[in-house]
Amino acid sequence: MAFIHVSGPAATEGFPKLASTAIAVGSVVALRGSGYLSQAEVISVRIAGVAIKKVASGDDDFASTTVVPVIVPGEEDVFEADVTGTATQGNVGRQFDLTKVTAGTAQNVDVGNTTYKVVTVVGFISASKVLVKFNGNYVYANKAN
Image 1 (spheres, rainbow, N blue to C red):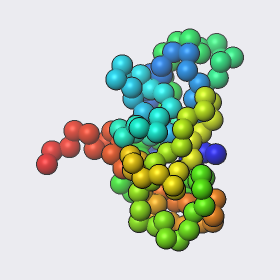
Image 2 (cartoon, rainbow, N blue to C red):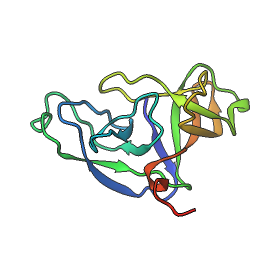
Image 3 (tube, rainbow, N blue to C red):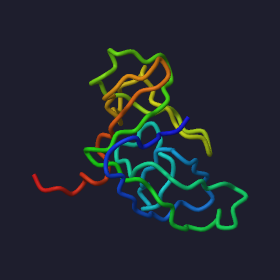
């Protein structure tokens, strides 16, 4: 139900959130075209990282664009993640999508879908958990060729 950082440097950065939008702790977040942070959609391929602060409708600043701290995944960062479907050792080395966003609930890795390839499975834990690295996060967006 959440992406949990298990290894790597875990660099953090703050991003202003989209006003009046719930964000779960441990959810994958992306920067929208507006430049504001929200939970990543299935089609999100430019990932900002993993939220380390919950944003809920009862928060005093829910309707504001306050800054949310995010673990920005680099090439060495590995996350433990729940899966939708049944994970197997055969998933290691393959790329998969995220599940659909439910407001305020962290996404899973969808081992049945490979359209957007947001994560690469780098380790098998159980039928319901895998280790992943993120593909195409914003850290790589402006690197020289």
